[in-house]
Image (cartoon, rainbow, N blue to C red):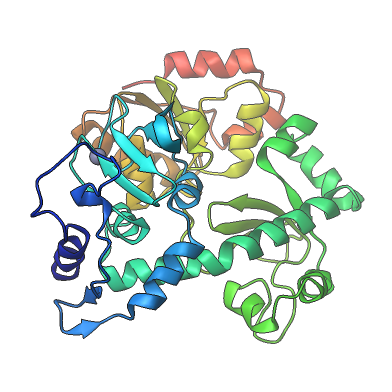
Amino acid sequence: MGATATVERVVLGEGRSPRRALFADTHHPCLGSGRALPYSANRGKKSVNRQALDELKQQIPLLDYLQAQDWQPVRPLSGGRWMGLCPLHSDHKPSFLVDPGKSLFYCYGCGRGGDVIRFAEIYHDVKFPQALALLRQWRGLAPLLQQATDFYRMQLHRHGEAVAYLHQRGVRSPELIEHMRIGYAPGGGCMRAWLLQSGYPLSALRQAGLVTSLGYDAYVHRIVFPLEGNLYGRSLSPSAPPHRFLPGAKGGLYAWAQAQSYPEVILVEGLFDYAVLWQAGFHNVTCSLGTHLNARQFRQLCDGPRAVCLTFDADGNGSGQHAAQCLSRSLRERGIPTRLVSLPEGHDPNSFFVGGGTAHEFQRLLERACL
Ligand SMILES: [Zn+2]
């Protein structure tokens, strides 16, 4: 808390002056000081270069960063400012004010405010230096991953084996492929060549994990799904490890911005499960990319009034069901009504639909799901 408190002092630097209308032409106490006070990390023992911080903040507009974390503006205010639900606490009516011009936020609900660094600290629950590291990483990685995603998407329809694999997994609708931005990594060094040609240094590709230490494309013959700050690659070849992520966090719940508004959310463990459900018309679906939810994913499920239908794999060894039971206990402790959907033995939602299951039959399973 030390670093955080210090930052807050800087941000609240003008808090001594009487409070006037928020976001008037003078400063709101939470909206930063015009004076060039040095940021001070690590309980004031170590100064961080103020200029470097200003540069970082300029390169990461707060609104861009918020939207990359699924935040959506709800109501416009004067001066180009926005109100929306607060991503820092459980918010039911928009109390989170964003001023994109000043790149500052203030929440009338939880009373917190500041700049993009302060936001990253609270949102990711990290201290000041870690927040800086996360933001620097995000700044470098976001355009690179976007470029890689565009490339993989271009490749998808050029490779019959990729389209055939998608069909085999029940993924057929062009709307779904567009919605999930599904691509294909052919390998053979073409990703590396493409990105080098686009001006990225090899070191950046290595650092992102797109290229191995030996200089080869990391994803070879893989269907690729872009995630928030990562790429998931599913191997077509049975001899390669089936699931791969780039180094770093898997991010929050998949496509949460779309699912979160539903009163009941279906949670699945794999992206191919997500795909077939979405294709069958269940747009209230989200995916945790594995049975273990990270802290952020868990917080997302709990961030509003909703029920959750857990639809993990019904694998022979019962590990999916065991994980679902543990998760359902934790969710209920947080007041989230949770039901467990029982699929036929040995099935996951993907194989259920690939095996001929219909939306109507799945709906019946949902209705029969037990508490
Ligand atoms: Zn708040």
